[in-house]
Image 1: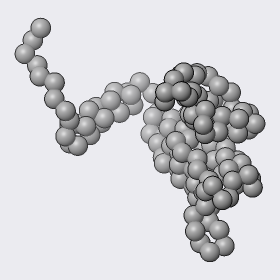
Image 2 (image 1 turned 180 degrees about the horizontal axis):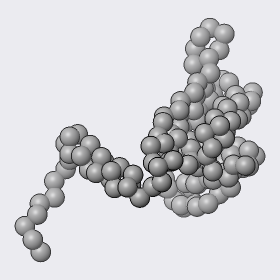
Image 3 (image 1 turned 45 degrees about the horizontal axis):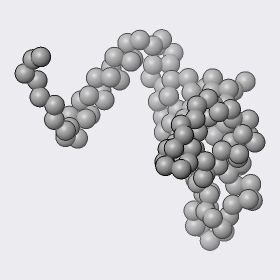
Length: 141
């Protein structure tokens, strides 16, 4: 074993490592997708201008990943989540994405995503303890 040391990264170190992987990945991809990266974040407001829901996502290469979909407790079951999901699917199709992926927990919204055509591709049990962590995928036309 050599004399390398393992240390926690500074922000600068983390950025260096991230950028080196981005550089490596870009060299493996075709020119038509290698620069595809964009954060796409949506929100909804009520009549008073308060944010009542939002969706945070990333368009990367040939897919879109939904990181967060949240609707205020007082505004659930009114179609707002479906509206946000429909809009991000429209955007993903416009950007010629092949699929959308996302994850959710058993105490969040797995049935909501199933209802919208998302299929479970992986499940981790006991994450967090006593619950399940689901990974979903929806292929786009």
